Length: 156
Ligand SMILES: [Zn+2]
Ligand SMILES: [Zn+2]
Image (tube, rainbow, N blue to C red; front, side, top):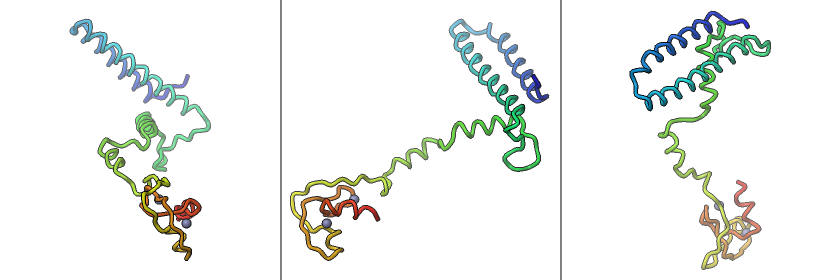
């Protein structure tokens, strides 16, 4: 397998990390040790699989090694990881953004034909110069509409 110097370097850094972890592990009681053990295995495997896919990408003729910025620079493991993180998180934004999204968007109001107590003039028929009294109102627009006009009215 062809390993780039940066991958080898990265692997060595990780191995040092694990060695240090082995030394410090004895200072923790058993339950702490278990917790840490899981975390280490998880991150170790994650790092390993990222490094492996990076090597595969370098080996693959279908991937260009240029960075996204278009500069003639070979993609490093760091920029590979950054890119991967961006792709995995996608459009996800913090909770602040999500709160704002939950505010009612006028385009996302639901429009259902609901029966009203009193009759009213169908707005669509009215604009077509026809007088038609109906009991059906749109729940979203709060406007009287006959069923045959309901769809046409919401097309615009
Ligand atoms: Zn109508
Ligand atoms: Zn409506």
